[in-house]
Every structure is written in C-alpha cells, then in structure tokens.
Amino acid sequence: MATFFASLQGTHAGHLTALGLALLAAVLHAIFGALQKGRHDPWLSRAAIDGCYGIMSLPLALFVVPWPSHRLWLLLAGAFFIHVGYKLLQAMAYSRGAYTVVYPVVRGTGPLFTVAASGFVFGELFTPGQWGGVLMLVCGILGLALYNLRHVVVDRHTLVPALALAVMTGGFVALYTTYDAYGIRAAADPFTFLAWFFTIDGIFMPVLTNRRWRALPMAEFVPLVRRGLVGAVVAWFSFGSIMMATRLDNVGQAAVLRETSTVWAAVIGWILLGEKVGPRRLLLMALIAGGAVLVEVAG
Image (tube, rainbow, N blue to C red):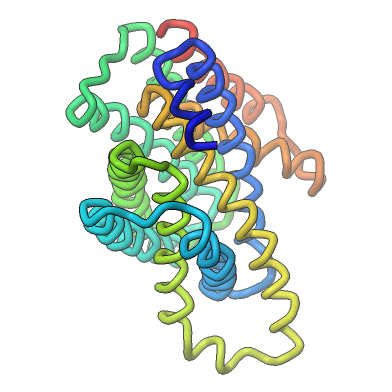
C-alpha cells in the first residue's frame, strides 16, 4: 500500500486522490464532531474514542508497519505534545461557549493559518484566485459563527474568553496539520507514522479522565465504549485521509478542503437530526463550498 501511494506522488492521479481524501476527511470530521456531541460527558467521549483507537492501532504498530527511525520517534513525540495542547484548548473553549459558536471559529481560523504556515514550511504558493477562495471559505465559516451567536443561547459572560480560546485552538489546528504533514512526509512508510501516532495519542485523554471513569455508572459504560469504538474508526479514517492527502499534494489546499466539514455537519444535522437550514445558513454554506471550489479551480 505504501508503495502504491508513493507511486502517486507528483502525478495528476495523486492530485485527484489527494482531493478525494481531503473531501472524505471533511465528511468524516463532521461525523466525528456529531459523535462527540452525544449525551455523555464530552471529556469521557473523547477519552473513549482516543483509548479505542490507541488499542486498535497497537497491533498494527507492533506487527504490521516498519519500525520508526530515531528521527521519526522524535517527530512523533512532538506530535503528541502538540495534540495535547490542541485537545486541552478545544475542551476549554467548548466549556466556555456554545459548540455552534466556537466550532466554526476554530475551523475558520485553522485553514487561514495553515495556508500561511505551509508557505513557510513547504514553500507552497497560492495564486491570488486561491487566496480569494480561502477568504470566501473563512468568511462563510465565521459568518456561520456570527449567525449561531445571534440565534443560540450562550453564556455571555464567558463569550470573550471562549472566542479567544477558539482562535488559539484554530492556531493549533494549523500547527498540528503542518507539523503532522512534515512528519508523515519524513516517514519512509506513511502508515508507520499513522499507526504509531494513534497508538501514542490514545494514551493522554484516558489517563487525564481517570477519576471521571471511576465515577461513571456501570449502565453508562457500555454505551460510551460503543461510541468510542465507532468514533475510533471514524477518527482513523478521517485523520488518516487528511494526512495522506498532505503527503500526496499541497498541504494548504488539503487543509482548506477539509474545512468544508462545517457544510457536511449542517447537512448531517438537516438530514438525520431534522434541523432547519434556512436561506441565510444555506447562503453561508454555499459561500464555504464556493471558496473550496475556487481554491481547487484557481490552483
């Protein structure tokens, strides 16, 4: 499999594959967000997902993929601490502001920072048309945040710190996207990076929430673990897809396409949860989708 993906790098087929993987990551990311919004404690939901994908990845890391090099171990250690920072900031932001307000701010600032960072790290250059597409997408996502802010009951006294934390979280989204793209490109076998990343990353949240697990009623344990198993599979393919997309093609472009997850999240809410979309949200979603299309077409 690694040989097959290596043969695609730098080709038109590789570009199309990266495009498909980035869009797949967007859909799966929206599903992942919906799984975290369940009736369970979000800290425990995330711990269940992380613990499950860590356990699932361990046999792959030990017995299937090649062993990491010394340099890759150092890169994996860096990725672990960056993702810890991201998860803590995200949880702090969600605990202070409504999900529908905070989430679009995180996802809207993330691609803007990533495109800028990929220029410095990988020398990627966006055309003026592509920058226009990025701005369209960001404006659409942040417009959703403002729309939700006006129509969702929020804790006004914690709104400013929640939004500040959301912007910081968006910065960490850009940091881990750029750093992980560098890491997976540095690995001789990309699946070595993915298997060991998930194994290591699955440790932190279960350890952090240890006391909460011990206080969890037994009746809640099985449903939470079931959610964790489903979320683990979704997370593996979501993160794996975007990472393979950044290995095959432009990092900034893949990051922009992934943030169409906000559109997919609204579509899932409309179809599965019966949520109303309305003309204004539909217009903002069209702006996001149009921005993503412009980034691709103007490239």
